[in-house]
Amino acid sequence: MIPPGHMLGCLGGGQLGRMFALAARTLGYDVTILDPDPQSPAAAVADVHLCAPYDDAGALAELAQRSAAITVEFENVPAQSMRFLAERRPVRPHPEAVAIAQDRVREKEFFRAHGLPVAPFAIVRSADDVAAALAVTGTRAVLKRAQLGYDGKGQAIVAGHDEAVSAFRAFGETLCVLEPRLDLTAEISVVLAIDADGRQACYPVAENIHRNGILDISIVPARVAPSFVRQALDAAGIIAQRLCYCGVLAVEFFVVGEQLLLNEIAPRPHNSGHYTLDACVISQFEQQVRTLCGLPLGGVELTAQAVMVNLLGDLWANGEPDWRVLLAEPGAKLHLYGKRSPRPGRKMGHYTCVSNAGLDHVLRRAQALREQLAPRA
Image (cartoon, rainbow, N blue to C red; front, side, top):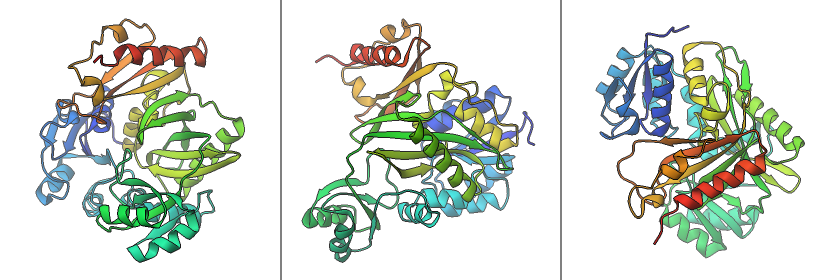
């Protein structure tokens, strides 16, 4: 066990790194962040900010020297950097688990190899592969870069051969995965914490609504049949077990009619788990600290029904939003990430509405608040 008072390291200084650092400092740890952005959100709350690229040998060596253990804020960090750190300090999650999550090809093949439910997919390595790939997925499809895609980036909806080839070339003819366009009934996710001995604690399943490829709203508990909840929890547990995972893991699913299909995994706390900050006994970020340091897992019980709403840079179109309406709502909790440059589609913060008055009531209040915050022309 690494007790409070030690320094913890984190690769990545975005909002997830910021919330990890706040949770760690609340428990009495110091935090060093490695991030190349001099204005990274986590830098403002960390004890030390190593402002350098993720593959900078000197910065990595200093991070290892300062830290008792190291975690990651996002999956798109160089695998070699993680391996370098893992040779010197405990790194959780393990670099090989991160390597699977950061590559859609490896991820999909991992699901299939372990008999987990996944939609048909095909790998596109060259333009010559497109015709055969469409035969697997159908002509209504989605082309996704194998790496470096998030929040709808690195994805293109295609209809037919010519559009798929054009999208592949627009992605720089890099390795891609082609998937069918599914008629979704719902999207849900599971966030779970796993300790070094394999014990698991699963948070309540969230129902997620996306807009333009970016998570818009998470509703907890998810409004899906109990059978889907059980299947999602079971599949997430199997994935964690097969990865020999230690840390916080998010698993996303598609509900398609009577089927539950895996979408992707994230080896870290997840946007759809932000509700845990205000509606659970222990947040996903404190669990990240606990699993990193060998502390017992905390409680994952839901203390109130919750709706989390993302705040994107679009909201700043006419300047800083007037937060008074949100702050006047007794059941709402505002979280701003300290980002200085709002732009369309950029996650600037979120708020969570909590209540035990019924999920429909919470959802109505959350939606009403967003309408009042929306910029006026």
